[in-house]
Length: 199
Ligand code: GAR
Image (cartoon, rainbow, N blue to C red; front, side, top):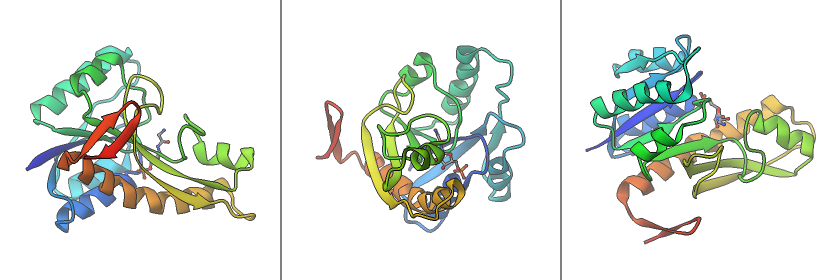
C-alpha cells in the first residue's frame, strides 16, 4: 500500500476529503502522517480525531532549509511515498524537493499559471476573469510551478465575493486532488516537458 504524507497549515478540508476517499476505499493508499507547521491548525485535530498520526513541527523563527530538514526526516521516518501539500503555506527549499523527486503534489485555488501565490481567489476576482478554478501540480523549487496533473474550472459569478468563490473552488479541489493522487500513485503517466500525459 502506498503511503501518503500530508502537509497542512490550517483548516485541512482537502486533507479531510483525501482521508474520506481513503476510508471509503476510493483511494488505494494510506495516510502515514499528517504534519502541520502551525500548532493551531484545525487539520491536526481532525487527523487525531481520525486516529491518524499527527505531528506538529512549528516553523516559526526557523530558517527555511533547517525547517525542511525536520519535515523531510519526519516524512522519511514514516516511509512516505507521496507528499501532498494541502494548504501548506510555505515554499519548499531545493533540499526538500530533491529528497522527493517527482513525488510532491500541491493544490492551488486558481488555474495556474494565473494567480500564483497568496489569495488566488481574491486575485481572480480583482482581475475580472469570468472563469477560474483549481490546479493540482507537481512541486518544484519555484512558487506554484511544476507540471500540471489536474485542473477544474469554476465560473466567476457577478455577485461573487472572494469567500463565495473560494467555497465553490474548494468543492472542485476536494474532487480533483484525490483524482490526481490516484493517477500519480498508479504510475500511468509520463511527463513530456511540462505536460503530464497518460501512459
Ligand atoms: C485551499 O483552497 C488550497 O487550495 C489553498 O489553501 C486552501 C487550504 O484549505 N492553498 C493555497 O493557496 C496554496 N498556495 P484547506 O486547509 O481547507 O485544505
